Image (cartoon, rainbow over all chains, first blue to last red; front, side, top):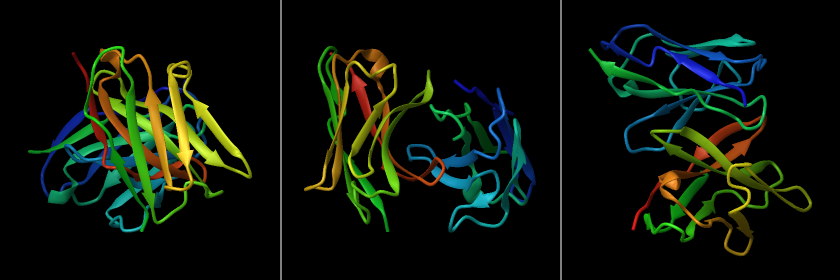
Length: 107
Length: 121
């Protein structure tokens, strides 16, 4: 299975901060990389698919980039509703595996 | 809009069968443009894909190797839903179970609300 590794595992930030989360794949996954946000006790929600395409309704402060094995999720100006846990997921090779998550907390 | 409503017990005894149902609204379980997946999440193992069902002129059902011998997925076109049965459960099956729609090239775009299933006597 393809291993997905996120860094950092957690971060503390303030409203208005720019934050970046990195996701690395154990082998090339081309552009088959998706990002999810999960709030406590809730199901994950799709934020970005195929590296950089925003899901409908997702604010433009979210962006994604990368290719091959290294990818990033950036939030340009963190808002209160953005706190939660973010997961990357590869959809290149079955089974479609997830990263372990990055928890974004208030500083 | 598409919604997935999960139902089923939250507590199952060891060695018994876990049964969950995913009722689909706003789409069809027999659509040819999506598959219907079950994924579980636990603190110890993270996300684990369990299986999927999809219709492409006939039904295809696939299972993860780790559960293949004891898992059954059944699409029900009359009720527009997908059911999951997992036999002979152990405490390692304790997790939050999600029903998820997959479209395009592997995009998990719609998730059910999740069901916490605890295996305990």
